Image (spheres, rainbow, N blue to C red):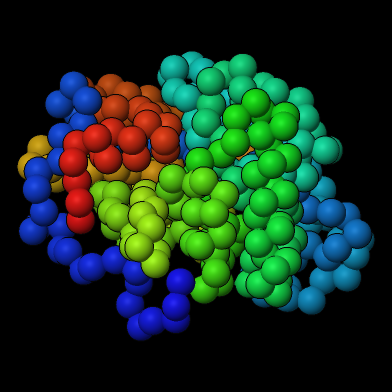
Length: 293
């Protein structure tokens, strides 16, 4: 993509689009996105949002994140199974080397795995162009080898992209990207004449910024999820909306927070007209509906 002042898509306000209808006449498509991430102990991990130069081994910060893979993700899986929700985890491909049990369990649950860099310690914006291209290709290939399917969706670590990222994703056969948190419906990106779908992700209904960066409580996070849902559900009566619930097992999966996730999902599931779906299901239905904006 050539550098430009606005994104590779037209500005189409949400009140100037055709009506969007989800399967079964649902008002709202809800997708749940656990971020399953790996941080090498040999690289520093920030202990707080203000710690920008940590020295390895940053044991406390690293171990907090490792808790998510050792314990937290399994709690998250149990809660999602309880509500019969198939998640769309974004996966650092290094997880395949270090914690293949997580990947196999996700596949058994019917989850859709998205690419999410090789490791969360190295963002695409820190790479030279050829290194970025190779890193994306390696990440997707490694996930495909273990999961049995190459991801068609991508979320960059830190939601970070370069001017080359969208072209690289298209070269690898990706269908959609979740980095652009600027809408409540999918839309098409035109990347040099090739099409890529942007799916709504969230930096608001996301436990990392909410709990870790802003020091919110689990009760406040649950309240935010419910309020987000209420607004989108009401608006969805006019035209379908998408709601993303973005999670990190090392945060939401600790003992004193996991019941909050259960409560929030139970609240949503108690409403008619809600379609719990994977990212790919949302994108493919949207494309089949003939949407062009």
